[in-house]
Amino acid sequence: MTLPQFVLASASPARKRLLQTIGIDPIVRPSDFDESTISQEHPDLLVEQLAKCKAEKVATDFADAIVTGCDSVLVIRGEIQGKPANTEEAIARWQQMRGSTGFLYTGHATVDTRQQKTLVRHQITQVTFANVSDRQIEAYVATGEPLKCAGSFALEGKGGLFVEKIAGCHTNVIGLSLPLLREMLQELGYDPTDYWQSA
Image 1 (tube, helix red, strand yellow):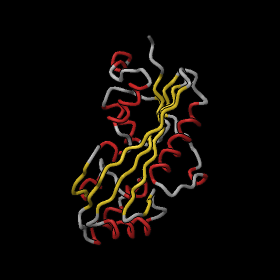
Image 2 (tube, rainbow, N blue to C red):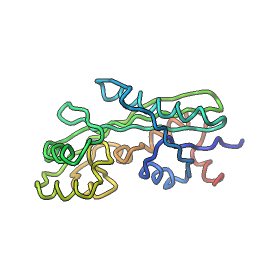
Image 3 (cartoon, rainbow, N blue to C red):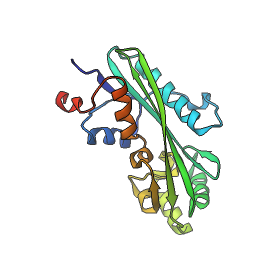
Image 4 (cartoon, rainbow, N blue to C red):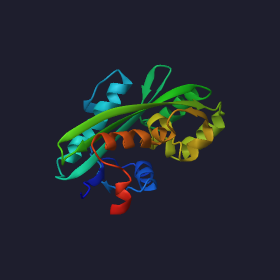
């Protein structure tokens, strides 16, 4: 059986690298979905809805594909945080985050256009941040990295220097839980290792 092509409905280089690491070289098709149209107070439902909207928007362009969309937020002290709007917001967030523990939620939606099936799940990982100085925060924000990331940090980048501890799936913090993706693909009837032969 020929496999459906694998499409990543995200512009995230980190998510693409994660897939390539496990032998899946995806077609990258960012959804350009307007996230401001979704209003949801519960972080698990928020990331699931956003991931589903992104995947479904891209899936309309493919007849025989597995389209995966993701969305992440950090919840710290009960507050949902996506990407910071600007440098000042990123600094203020880090001043709040340092020495604290938050929860990184990533929604995953996989649309199988061959079978006309959609699966939506989320994963939660606990992240503890170092008690970094104002100088270190300003130096990190000056790199521009926090402005591109949910929660104002990238575990796989310079932000990894300021993460003390992770409890749970570490790839979830990077933006795509590989164990959860494996489970979702298997639930749809595919073995992820089959993509190794089709490369």
